[in-house]
Image (cartoon, rainbow, N blue to C red; front, side, top):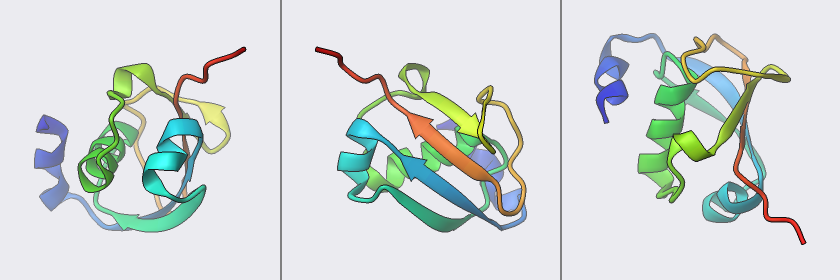
Length: 91
């Protein structure tokens, strides 16, 4: 995961992460505050995917940063709120 290569040079920050649907099930939590050295929301997802074994690729997940849908290249800053939204099956 090439985005993880940049983690060592980045400063640590605390962010809030909210999970929904499958990601919530796989993580076992609805939300958490965590410390990360990830610079972008993509790096954060890859970090969490590796740590928690998320089965979904980032390309099938939507991301919101501070209550706005965001691109995967968005930069993270201290106290950001990140929401990962997997596809949800309807019935």
